[in-house]
Length: 409
Image (cartoon, helix red, strand yellow):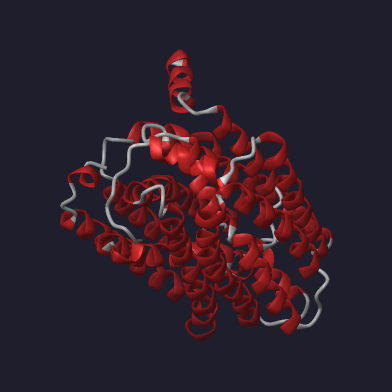
């Protein structure tokens, strides 16, 4: 039994390139300090602003992300993913520290927008880098490895964030900024320089699946993006209304909130690669996304269960939410990468990232307003309903997908 388990983990991590491991290390360092966003609504209420104002700050972060993702995709295709990642990490780190010094609400909002613009321009370039360092066979594994690093860092960061927030909220910004800057220079130190010419030369040697010349002409992809907005709108409650509910509704302190939030990253670090290894090729990607959406709906319904201890409810919610992530999100990246070519991959990645950014705006602004109007109980019912609708949408898109290559995935 033990040998079988060991071999399963070995197989799950086999076939990944050295450069992918190095990129994952950079992401682990970076995300171990990613703690500001998870505590942003709590921070705003802590310094005297309302819950709704805190929700709008996170929504503004999403607006900046939307613009940053679009710009990042264009810049990555135009100048290459290598330096796009570096400057995004470096400048984002500086802006995190600057944001922590802002006092007025307008200054916080303006700084948050520019921070997210710079910070989120990293994502399309990073997606292009993952595709560059991997082949079609190991692509989902490679995306999952980076997700593992991100979520392990998220788990570490959330636990640290809970401790820091209980001491002084401003420490969050210094730690987040510093780890961003460290990650930027680690990128230069660990990964060899890749010029745009080298990037395109390797691209020409790879097999392409030419679906459309532009993501804006790929109708199936555009429907998929719409479904991503639904999925991510629900998911982003994890960073806005969920921490507030843990504190206000379940009566958990910042330390316990940090512990519960860290469970997400820890579980993903322990089992996601194995789950991806077992599911890859056995179910179509869109079907797996549908399953993940259903489990996410169940996770929000758990928050409406009465008569249980707050920490137990919070932990059970996080368990289901994490399995929803692991069932759906690794395959989302592989799905859109398969629809792109090496010449337009940055634009596909940008539109994909923009969908998540738009959802962050919608989820952050509407979630807190719904709570103000009709309470947390009804919010969780609404979010669960949207998740079920998204699951039905993925199934519909799968049935409508006639492309033989993508239908197999």
